[in-house]
Image (cartoon, rainbow, N blue to C red):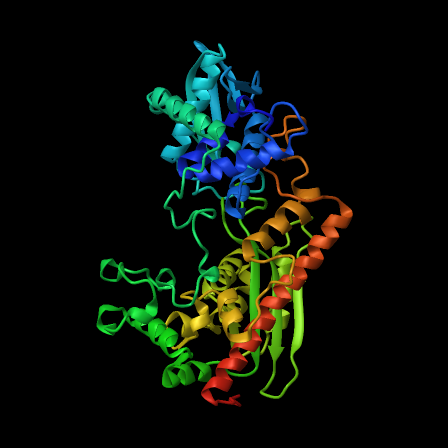
Length: 496
């Protein structure tokens, strides 16, 4: 920023500032540093985390789908003299002036969406654009795509005029206060939200005895303590908390040998270690898919025939150019045939995907459901605290368990988690073919909140390589974790 007066507050800034003023200041500061002299423009204006980026991009796709259906529509922005800006919005002529149309990718309309539209309406009115109606198009969660996409069935129209206009005065007043705060550039302090990526301390960065790592959180009886070492009476704790505290105080893992051995006995050979990656988007890409339904696009498999048998590696990654579900079914069934145990971590995605694919392809239904029935969830002993390592810091996710037991996670990989994998596939691999028409040329809406990095042939191929490495690491880690649990219990299974 070149001067305090050059600060511009967009409606997206407003939504962020309502949640955390500190994050708002960080965004505006970064925007100012990126300006090459002159007034700080609202772009780059990227959300701060993957969930927000994905939501913004899905909103942009909903916006594009709506724009292409309307006639006599305009798509433009407005900025008040004091520096409050409404990012580009769709508006169409109405009897009393203009109707704002806000397509959203969510299936419900939240109060925050009404607040943001109240600010947008106030800005347009201040710029002599007579907005007299406001409608929101939300995604119909019951919609399932047929052969062709039905816009009228996918979106539900809601007239929000009264709810939005009732908020204009208070919303504009709050926006002015946030704008003044941004111009003063004073740290407003923590927002107090434990989910805030800027104000909270991630669990993985806390000391192992930090009370904030306590699983299920700490209640009022434990508010006074500054370390888990201070807890002397385990009766005030839940079972899982007691196990965690004991592990920290003794500085060693806690193992329920009988339960763990019973679990390991269910992991029979031949074993297949399976991991799915899936994509879920608001606008269903293929026939038979519902809005926001998880669709697997990749799997990784490590197979072991017996205790001393070598590992066999296989996998699949969709090309992204057509409906890949039938191909993934064929490839998967050829890899899991004959397996007694299908080992996964967190059975939800794999089990749901197998049953959903069984519904979609009845000819393979029996085989897919049999595969689902053989699932063994490796997260179970950690979720039930049959095994707990103090380095887990109250977390049971695969990355946390891997770092605690094996001393490594996915730090060396380009892709760090499942959501990032999903977005790399959808916005980089599938984009050139399936999504090439979803873009607002020239207006910067998608660019201002887009998926970072280059696109094109080389970037697409690099993304595929990164996806393959990430998925292979997931199943390799499953193999190592199971082997470590067997070592801990002194159990070398040879059941057939």
